[in-house]
Image (cartoon, rainbow over all chains, first blue to last red; front, top):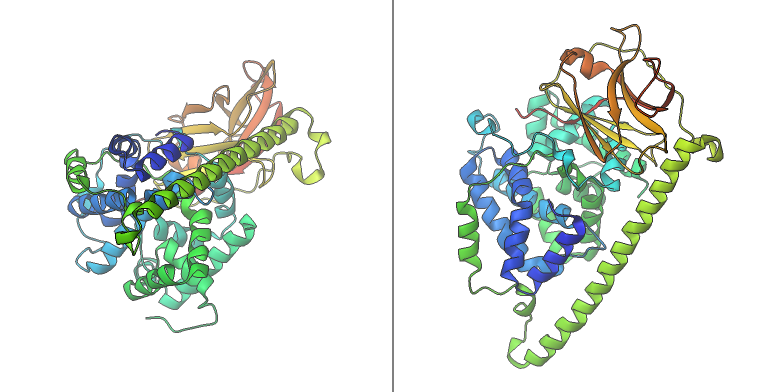
Amino acid sequence: MLSSQELVWLLAAVAKGDRAAFERLYAATRAKLYGVVLRILRRRDLADEVMQETYLKIWNSAGQFDPAMSSPITWMVAIARNRAIDQVRKKTEVSIDEDPAVLEIAAESPDPLARREMTEELRRLLACMGRLDEERRRLVLFAYYDGWSREQLAAKFGKPVNTVKTWLRRALMEIRECLGS
Amino acid sequence: MTDADDTDTPEMLAAEYVLGTLAGNEREKAQRLIASDPAFAALVRGWEHRIGQLHAMVTPVEPPPEIWSRIRARIEGVEPSAAIVLPHAGHAARIVAEGNVIDLRKRLGRWRQAAAGLAAIAAVLLAVVVTAVRDPELLPGPLRPKPIEVTKVVEKEVNPGRFVAVLQPNAASPAFILTVDVANRTASVRRVAGGPPPGKSYELWLVSDRFPAPRSLGIVGANDFTRAALSAYDPAVLSNATYAVSLEPAGGSPSGLPTEVLFASKLIESVPPSR
């Protein structure tokens, strides 16, 4: 992974239509984004399609990226996650219990923290996550990493949907309060 | 579908949209609001800023090479949208060009500001951490490193997910982030800012009620990133232990016990196992 500043400059070049910069941006970020969408979609064919849509969207909207508001990789991951979750919500046949084989993935690196994306924001967030009640923390983590809806979380955790909704919202408010922003 | 309640606010809709827990129809509603309501779009950006960093814990996976050739084929001849989304393209070519220049200059300004801001944050962090290590009594009370606190260990179900401990004197100034892969029995320590003081080393310790004394996991923090092998410990011990960092003479503790404990923390789950 390139540094955040290098990614900012690549996005700026992409916003001007620089295809070579776009290829470098892809090379620097593809494994992160693929890891994110594959975990949510659990099927390579769907993940492949979402990757294409995601990078087309990045190509088309790089000019809207604002480094004062977000880090480049967080902005790109948000686009990819939103595409993947939209896809899961549309395709009811993507059952969360389906196709466990796809999850036996040879990861590129066993340790994502060996990377330069470790940021002050992440450190603060992890500290705040650590303060949450354990079950609520797990709800938040499964929602974020697996893209599970309240209904799916309720089924997996054996709780009523309204309880899950209440817990999720309390957890989110606690995170906001802890981060102080 | 769930009943409406008094937490059904735009703030919570934005938060749950970003987290990903909304049903399909609620997501569509949120997306319409993002497009039509700048205040709602700002709420969404706020939540992306708050929790979006969780992606850093996701293990990267190399995609198949044909994806790039498909993307490249789809952008051939397609310019980025900045120049083509304007409504009155017919008579506005010159204005478009000028608008782009101004816009880019503004953006350049913002990038510079962002870079300067990041540098300032890094400098403050470094100062706090180094001060905490060298002269803890110079810091205001809440910033002083706390003495080691070995809480009662409760045996929990062993979980093969990824765990993390933020080893820090307080929530505002963490100094090390420890990640433990319980299944593979490996750990990595990410140093946040500043190496050890001259002539000193940081040492990582495992504290468990299974052992009468803390066990050394080795010297850490000489570089930004250190790995530690934990093959001597079973997953239950690793999940439930307290992890501590001490300041030692160069090369590590002379006594085999921590000399001056700076931070200690238990692990929290950071990425649940995929299931």
